[in-house]
Length: 245
Image 1 (cartoon, one colour):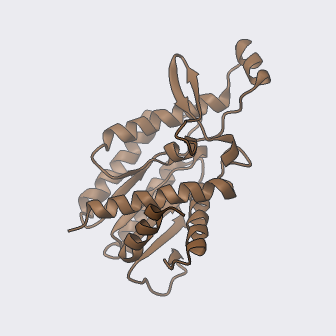
Image 2 (tube, rainbow, N blue to C red):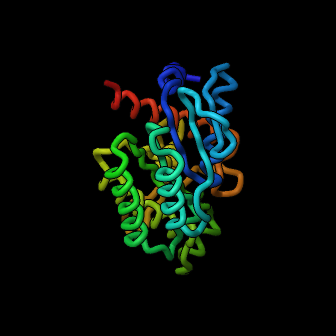
């Protein structure tokens, strides 16, 4: 573990964080636990509804909504913050899943719904800092077979879906440029040396999940969950420093 992650964990000791997610978020939480175990550091990782009392600092998390129905995730996240966590948390994150956005998704409509949800929550809960999260990506296979199919004009659904995900992410990054953001998509697509897993579509560069980071094309494996979790921890600590008195 790097020194900056160790320091970030220290900064999280008194932060009250809520994270609404689905399975990739569960991978990230498992990675956080891996890091805590390896560093012999204590930070309560709690599941909503299973904690009798909330300590001074914690990461509280739970699945929200239904996969493939991202609007239900917005609604569930909003309900939980309003009805269960108002006055009990300092930071809150909502993460979509890669399966929520595919090549047929209406990004404009989805982003408008997300924006209305988050802007409403921010207005009514000024005591909570809402941290945006870019949508995760899937791995886009490469190789001769893929190249031949594309040459024959067959659509590459994997790439087209990542195009839509990146379109959503670019909208989020530009709209909320002044807000804290955990760029999950960047973490998933960036190699240790800084290179990005990328492809070109209609003359523009798009990114995808690195193949070595996943065993099924979408979820994080044991290697990548720790890498992404470290970036998650750094992002939280950066936000906390920005909110320090």
